[in-house]
Length: 117
Image (cartoon, rainbow, N blue to C red):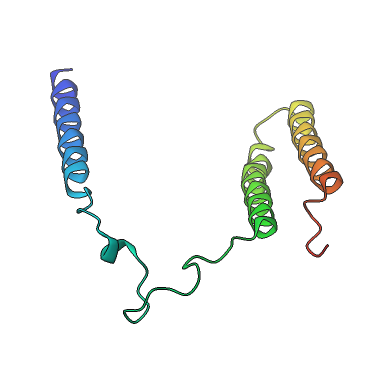
């Protein structure tokens, strides 16, 4: 029991040291006009240095990530099938798919899946 407490203390101490060093080393230097302006051959920039962000592309990317995570959650159900009760496995899997399809239907109705408008 004493070994576990000592190891816990050592690990917590190391975590605190690493987080403190990261906080100290990540401080930004003093920003002045020259360092914070975009580099454009010494001249003042003619237009905005940042391009406008496509909100539609962002929504498609978020929807892709959501479905990707949900597929990753569905894959273990195939492995669990051998050890679980057939009714409970079927019920949980169908409920998960229904929630997924309701979300897809909602996104479709909101028009988030239309790429070109």
